[in-house]
Length: 154
Image 1: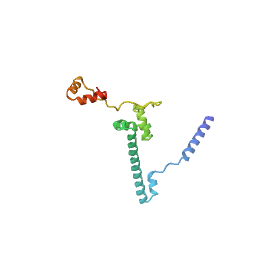
Image 2 (image 1 turned 135 degrees about the vertical axis):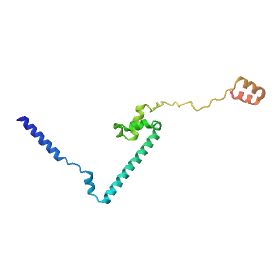
Image 3 (image 1 turned 45 degrees about the vertical axis):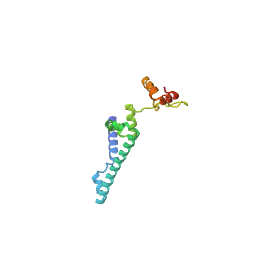
Image 4 (image 1 turned 90 degrees about the vertical axis):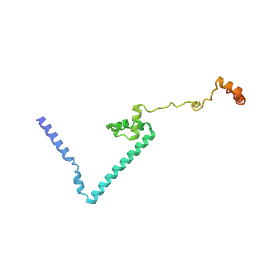
């Protein structure tokens, strides 16, 4: 008897839950509520929304490529990364940051501590003269030889 009562209870609960959920109207029923002009406007609005979404997506992609220039080189890999179900929900910038970190493309330079300034890199080396060139200048171009000697370049 008790088992029968439980079955009956759950069957009634199931029927209550099913009847309380209203089925969503089908698109054809919705369109019947609008006039021909309303249907046409609704279609145009839908097209404009799709166009706006595509423009926003292109703009976000462009901004991400500016911030992360390596995305241009790895376009196909990044597109595959975006196709993943988990990554579709992310914004383009967050997806680009995640893609870069997964691929090890983010280079973080250590912050320099203290008063020391970065050095090196831009100074051009001065030309050095061979022994034959120095002998030639000594014999044929004394003024240049004397100037280089005074400046300490020889």
